[in-house]
Length: 116
Image (tube, rainbow, N blue to C red; front, top):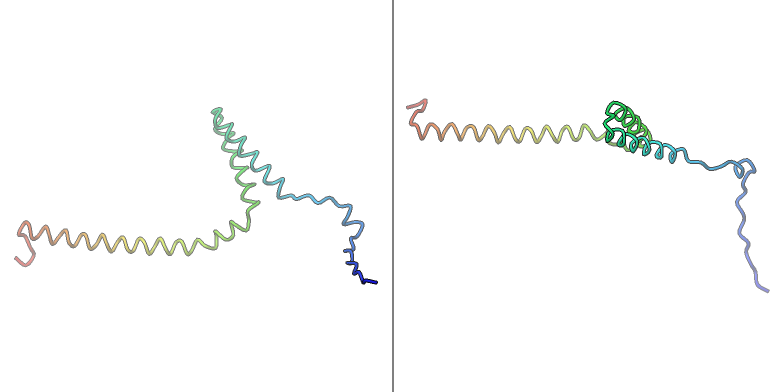
């Protein structure tokens, strides 16, 4: 005779089995998408004020659904600010070098120098 192992079943409480599994995130996404589509139609029909209000509401719903993404973006802002500041510093150095070369070239071509 062979031995057959029977896997144990997961016990599910009757309350958990009867509760419907609805995802509120899906409804938020549907509402946000619908609001943004409606805002687009309102803007196309020249109803700007209503379109902007509905569009802002749709955007707010979409952002509320993406809280983790917004949080990660918010935490990365200081890094981006530092990168932009470094870029501006590099551009300023290049502009200063260009200005100095321009002035020396101008002095050489015109013959007007501070020491002459």
